Amino acid sequence: MQFNKPPLSLDDQLDRLIQRGLTVPDRQRALHYLRHLNYYRLGAYWLPFEVDHRTHRLRPGTTLDDVLNLYVFDREFRLLVMDAIERIEVSIRTRWAYHMAHTYGPHCHLDPALFKSPHRSWRHEERLRALEGEVRRSQETFIRHLSATYDEPLPPVWALVEIMTFGQLSQWYANTRQRRDRNAVAREYDFDESVMTSVLHHLSTVRNQCAHHARLWNREFTFLPKLPKDRPAAVLDTLSFDASRRIYNTLTLMLHLMDVVNPHHHWWERLIGLIDHHAINVAEMGFPDDWRDRPLWAMHRPK
Image (cartoon, rainbow, N blue to C red; front, side):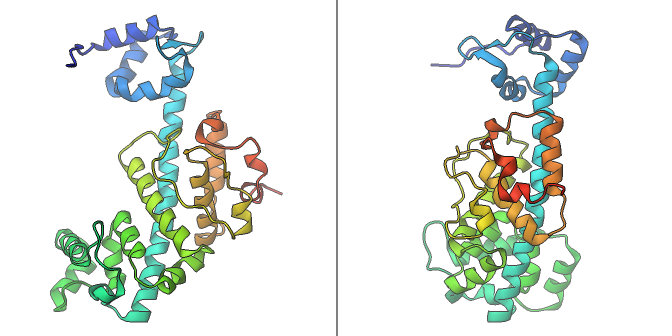
């Protein structure tokens, strides 16, 4: 079967939405948004307002502002999540590089014995070549200085981590051979190494969704993080173990990591303020009904 539907003009797109029940008091304003926001992109945000998914009929009284409110929330939500992931990533880069350098030397990453045996998704030589490519492309002054000054295949690990992507960092950590080395990093955040490995992998996928401007608000994730079973107590009591594949547990784990990285942060306040400002139904993000009373969120409430 071939796709043979013609593209719709902006006016036709808007007429279709009006036929489906969207209230549009200002046609020119609505056309402006359709001119700059792809109809298909906005489509994900009017889905919650549909009363009949087969016909795409919208709930009576649904306005363009209702749809845009959800769209703007999701855009600001992605930026807030990216802000936390950046700080978490920088912290874990620092801890992994510090431990490995002090335990095995500045160029520990060149020693294949320190990493797991080659398998389909991890080959030490291939990962080194990928990092060599990052070094060649890097415009960072410190990388250029180290490459020009020293006769080494790659800069020392504490410099190299600064040009790794989050995905690369996740892979290097996961494939560090000795469990004690992985735990030396994970224990900084009161996690077991298997939990930290999974959380890093998951957060790298979340970061990629944010970086590519993909919908985050009610997304169902294919790869979920492994949840801790023994500690920390506040995390265990805040997680939702019967949650859907949506983002609530991710945010809970991020809040814990932020508490470790920057105990005086206001990220939680900004997140709650964003949810309240846009009057978001957080059940669509996997939040349990009593989430505000669960320990990690409750401990941040003003006394």
